[in-house]
Length: 520
Image (cartoon, rainbow, N blue to C red; front, side, top):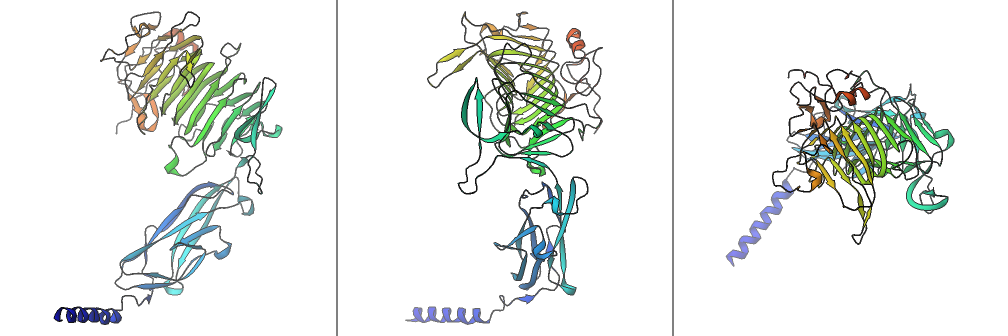
């Protein structure tokens, strides 16, 4: 009985005590809010494309629960910003409650049509503010967004059926329907200029027997799973030029994903690839940066074309989720090419083909997980689902005055199925290579590093002394083992490095002549 009375008394006391509490009696705010930042910068977005979601944290550091009479955008309902407060979206909110010593999140997004604003040139600074309370208690947090105008290329979409246009390809005279979302470029879209950036949704296909020309200084951004497809008889000519400012790269052509926030600036796999299909011809790429793709360049077919399927010069390819360049029974010549940070290989010459790289830096410092393949992969076959091999000639694979390195060991792999019907020709000349077989795993004849038919005047496992591999900076310094070790005959064929520095005397291995790094 006493125990029951005790519980009744306790419960009654708690009910009486809670009814007297004033913790949840909210007082009007007095302008003493604090904020996680006084200005929210929503990073650059393209006109008509929604931004990422940004947040602002609002603190009540006082001892009283408060009621904020109003939280609103200065421009009200006409604002291009959108807010979410306590899970409710809108532009004006009333009587927002905030407990003592507590905080709340406000989430912010924007979409701006630059054509409706007073834009000067192709960029426009759009601003607003979030106002808390009014009168003498009013506090503000500024909102700032840089809106960039762009030319958008995207497939048609049926708003009723939600079906997105897909590509039909002409292959050897036969029309093949694909599941690739995208469309062919129109005649007036076959020259990308540097006047405005281009934003591509889906695959932009270069029509049969046409040429897409991309001018120096152009910027091309790709949405997720998007890319450029060069079709039968078609070509792509990317005509970048040497830049005077290596930070701005004002004359280079840059191809990357369309997420412009700093957090995405070095994120691999944001878009698909530049795909040079089997029938495409005479493709050239010069002074170009290709970054954050799944495959930087996918090059198919035509191994014995009169002109190489692809000539690529003075180009950097970074942060590819799978391969930097993947060649499949094709022909590629590269000079002053720099490739790094690929989830598989930086360069893969597969199913045979013809490949010639001179004064290139092909390395792989992938740190986003385990990778199975080295910086450079060469093979002469492809396996089907039942593990049956189709063989093809590796007509030539020559690496002259190249650095082949990375954070794994070894950094090249030669996969050969020996058969009298196919060739497997390769040679590394005056290269700095990471290859150390401590476990004697690579015992095949192709790995006989003393065979001068395949390996001549190479340097193994010495420090290239790169400036900063984490920042994709592969110029070499004064302590590099590559200094003055290049073959002069090949150097004369590529007389300047990727920065335009003359290398005809005392040439260094790789895409760069060495420099003296500034003291930290």
